[in-house]
Amino acid sequence: MGQKGFFDVERRLEAISAKGDPLETIKKMVRWEDFRADIEAVTETKPEERQSNAGRKPYDTILKFKIVVLQSLHNLSDEQTEYLIRDRLSFMRFLDLELEDPVPDATTIWLFREALAEAGLIDQLFERFGQHLEAEGYIARGGQIIDATIVSVPKQRNTKEENEAIKAGKTPEGWEKQLAKNAQKDKDARWTKRNDESFYGYKNHVGVDKAHKLIRKWDATDGRARQSEAGRCARSLQHRQEGLGGQRRSVQIEAGLKEKGLQSRIHRRAARNRPLSERQKSANTTRSKVRARVEHVFGHQQSSMGGKIVRNIGIARARFKIGMMNLGYNIRRLVQLKRVAAAPA
Image (cartoon, rainbow, N blue to C red; front, side):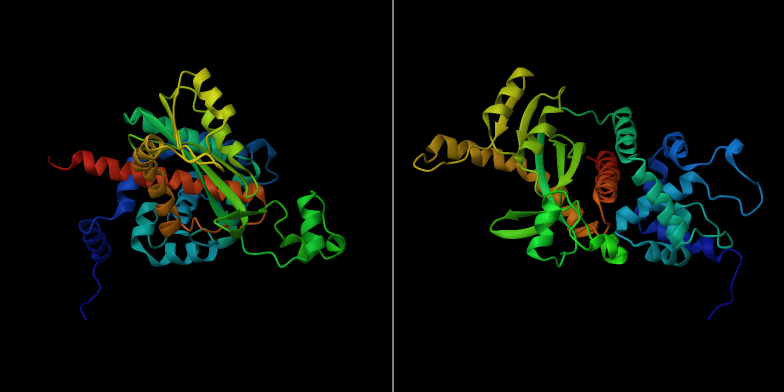
């Protein structure tokens, strides 16, 4: 075993870079300072409101935000995040931390994320990065693919009566006296069915542009939300050229698209005693090739970002988790688009 040298860490980081550290690329590519004002407006105590200037200096806002991004990219708990920041040189470099620098603990990370979730800031953060994408030349062109996927929560072992009360927007009888139980129950999530299988949780509705496969619009709802939510997402894409998607064709959605001058590319579905014609089947096959692009988005989120399940409790936290997952996906997608653009023809 060789002796420790002054440049050991630097050499190790050079070796990591040579292997293609994606975090190094993300660190350079994202304009992190663009997020500072939005975040500090809801998380930082104003100087005149501080009771004392004593104590440890607070951690930098961008440092804490980059930690939340790391959590989203790698599906990490607060405790795992703290450990891996201390353990991984690539994480430390991404956060601009040296070996001797203090690392935010799990509680600090949780409190910061809670502040962002409670303030409902995720929409603003997502939009801020969307502005960066457009500034980089990745402007939404062509069709928009609208679809939704189920994001489950840990199953609630409730009685039928308790589920009925939750569905009615009430707190089940006796829960208010059982504070620990009440705090650990997600009363915002709802049951839904897909392919005859039941799920309890939320839905991630996204609008993905066909050209770049970037998420342009999104929304998070409880699992009970039907295709009307996808239609609402579709109607929000007012400046797009086409309406593509996984939502069901309806008179309301078709009229909304037509009113905005958008061309519908929504699948046609057979009805009882009204089978699809061969022409309609062929058109659906063509649409499926385009629609598959949104499935790539959901597939990446579920396989690499923990997109199958949310372990937070309540719609506010779930919405922040889902929103950060969509933001994290766009960050990774930008890296991939840049890499493809830079590759020799």
